[in-house]
Image (cartoon, rainbow, N blue to C red; front, side, top):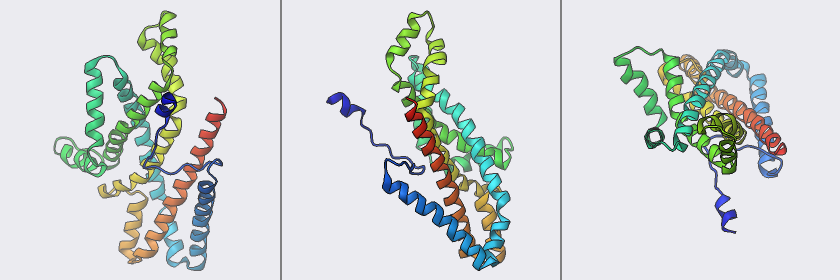
Length: 261
């Protein structure tokens, strides 16, 4: 009983709720929200093309920039997170300490502060392009969270796997590379997907660096036309549709992974 209780965890992330058919309430809510958002956006652009349709035509390049920042940051965060996760489970005290310190410090500083710091503080010594600084700041921040995801994934693999690899003559590094990490990737895929959605939403913060993302383009349109309510309604609906779309993809991926076990 105690062992089963230890395995129970309350997982609350800042990403999106992942809809699955096991949770019919959430699954129904996802369908209502997703198709409702598409319907509302379609109705607004049809019934009142000025300004709703005009806004929709103004922001596609911002959507592309948002995806560039998000994908660039998540790829770099995966590399940083894997290194941090391996450091967190390392037996070497120095590596473990450095990785643990990185995770605790970064998770204790708000993302917005990190974006400002990298862009403005480091800008005193080296000029960092707007988009690159945004990607680096978000990757460093989310790398700390990814590090904990990878740590949990690695530690979820039965210890017998490592012992069997060592028995076959592998070193710990070889066993980690060839045996443990590949299995851990299957475990961490769903939470990594959740972090992707959280990062997608947080990418709106890069607009403060004059990066022409979706929110920035919306702000530009609103400041020129003074249609703040209409503009931010469209922006909010676009973010909602994108977020719900990816949450569904992650839900499908998670179901297939669980079915394959």
